[in-house]
Length: 248
Image (cartoon, rainbow, N blue to C red):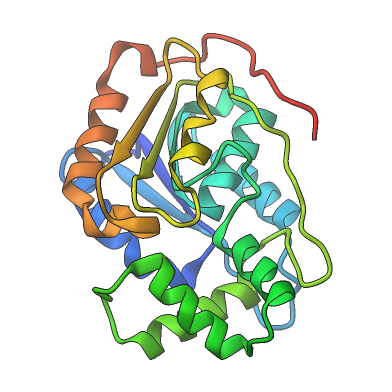
């Protein structure tokens, strides 16, 4: 039996956090041919957002049609930047936990606190775990701390202890779905609602009632339902307008 070609592509630039994507991907794969693309660098290579963008484009060039792109957090930011550079390759874009100022990631929150608080990395990451996941942790706290530590070291974040970056705000040409959570301590509701000025008639904003920053893990079925409804809508089939960008 021939495997159907994918209609959607899940982007992941944080392999140490991919555990939290799996419930949603299982839900989506029951109704949608979806593939995964992952950015992984070895210990001898520097992690680079620009390199990740180039590799993603090389991958998508092998497909004979535009795909629905999806991503959470920094992975969604990569999808957003890609959709602005190569709109002809993007059928739609779904962002989860991505602020209207895309540079606001959990990495940025971490580095801000490193500057403000006299805490060690391990203690601050332990506090970050509580902030990101709440009191009901999906796995033991020490495993989550280790996953965040590895993500800091390997994900192609544009932030560092020396400098925090900003990215252009604005929309994209393709239909856009922005999913957020009412209880997210990183992309809290005002940061998600700030997408509204950039939304086209084809775009949607949706807010999950619970789940914090990884709401797609805790509420996978609910999130999948929103994504599938968006992708099946008549307006999510093709770009309709040029994106508008705000200056840095």
